[in-house]
Length: 292
Image 1 (cartoon, rainbow, N blue to C red):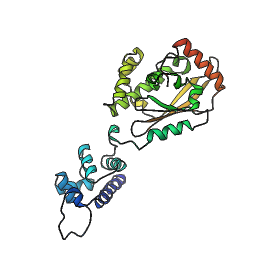
Image 2 (cartoon, rainbow, N blue to C red):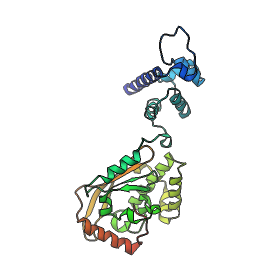
Image 3 (cartoon, helix red, strand yellow):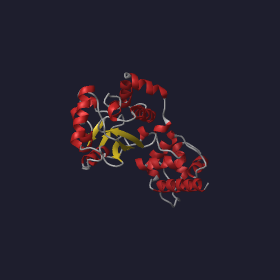
Image 4 (cartoon, one colour):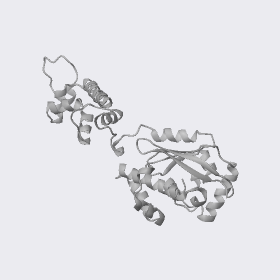
């Protein structure tokens, strides 16, 4: 109850402050000559929205709900920034706007690319992908411990498709769970970005793969929403399994930062690991297979 009261007060105070920054003339309104306060009054916003002052007053005080269309109209009227729009949604509905409608920060891809390329520690393989897991950038650690994406054509540099290549069976201790995790992620992404052509293309490619198509039909979603996923890797045929955590962080615009963090470090030298992986790739699928 206390949280609800706080949220309503925050909504009221936020909208009141936002109204104060916009002048009636900005909306083509002519305020009465005897008006003393500057900025918009609740009645001004209500008139522009074509709703009753009573309804808008109830909305500002958290007593009346609004759909996404109304929230976006209020966003435009009050000249809210992209961050303020997200804030309005959280206060009014307790959830963020649909991901496809959120404006990404300027230069987000460039900043994430610079981040992964400057991560010099070979213990933390990292990559940046777009909304459909197409790999945009990666660091030296990833190409040291795993197949180098630079050796793969652009159309094959996809983290989800890599999960369905034959070499995964010898690299990942539980390949079925690993693949189902990725399929669950794609389901979630498609729900948030249903019109994105990159995701539709990825789904089409997965549907042409029998193993992926079977997992897709199971519609297993709930347990794959975590941004931290345990993954066990086998570095060599006789070596112990390496316990790692796969961190997946999504940024506005659909960009993702993927990082693989070993719990106790890797158990073999990078060069030996690289030669092992390359032998497996050449034997199972050839260098043209898609990799992360």
